[in-house]
Length: 334
Ligand SMILES: Nc1ncnc2c1ncn2[C@@H]1O[C@H](COP(=O)(O)OP(=O)(O)O)[C@@H](O)[C@H]1O
Ligand SMILES: [Mg+2]
Image 1 (cartoon, rainbow, N blue to C red):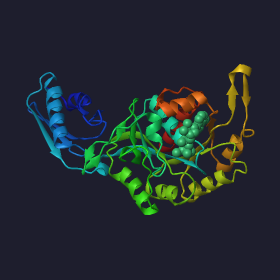
Image 2: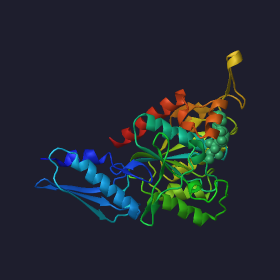
Image 3: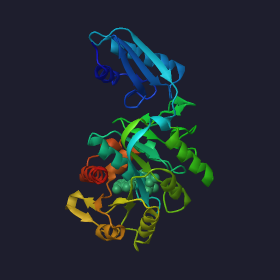
Image 4: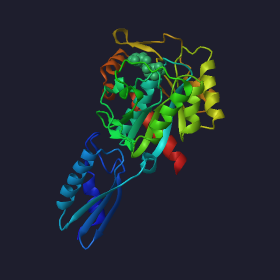
């Protein structure tokens, strides 16, 4: 007779049309019951328009029927909120003292790094007034879903992405909202988006240490914070502010990352420290957290960002970021 495990395995192959992600990964499978060879599959209808429900039903029947000795298949839908379905292992917020230091870039590379290690990863773009995650990943698909839940958009390497940018009529439309509305949008991205089962959700925080990043740190269950800075942050004041804020909110600082640390000139095989020498160790001391690595000013990387191909970037920092963060977060847990 067919087993529950066989049925669940086969459901891995059933994709939700709007996002092309499996109903298992989206955690839509509520129950699999087998009685006298008859298979009953209960699914959450969250984020599924009627057409999608029909399509998923047909697919479920098809894959289960293919199993040896499977009898009749019955599919039932129940209601559930995204918050009831989301199972997110670790939420990592990427923070900076000020804008333009490469926070979104590091947020994206962090997601890429963890994805390359085989984890399921999502990015929540909480920088509502300056959303830049979709551009770096070359995403402009409108998110699917309905009143019961919004679906994220999947990147080329299958990282789930949600950003206000994907919901605006035109990518260039600016968001001119006041604080409370911004806070509400971010909360909605947390509560009303069906992220499903993720090992990591990376949050690209709004820049600086004002109200917007504070709200996110207060309202979302952040496991830890990564602080991005550049050697330009001369007095280290801005970084200390970020550190203070994370500590005040009692969020562990998982590490610090230095961006635009130097420019490498291959013709003369030299690293030029445009903004002065690295402050990585000093910042790490100030944050009482590990120095996770540095990123040079890399024209190739800037080009990949502009073309929406950040997932193609290869650099040492991607390996080290992924390893350090996975150790830091799973170490906490076990
Ligand atoms: N190390 C780097 N090398 C090349 N370009 C970079 C680097 N860091 C950032 N940039 C460029 O600077 C721009 C701003 O970076 P971004 O991550 O959006 O900053 P922030 O989110 O802190 O405002 C990006 O479009 C990116 O192309
Ligand atoms: Mg940004």
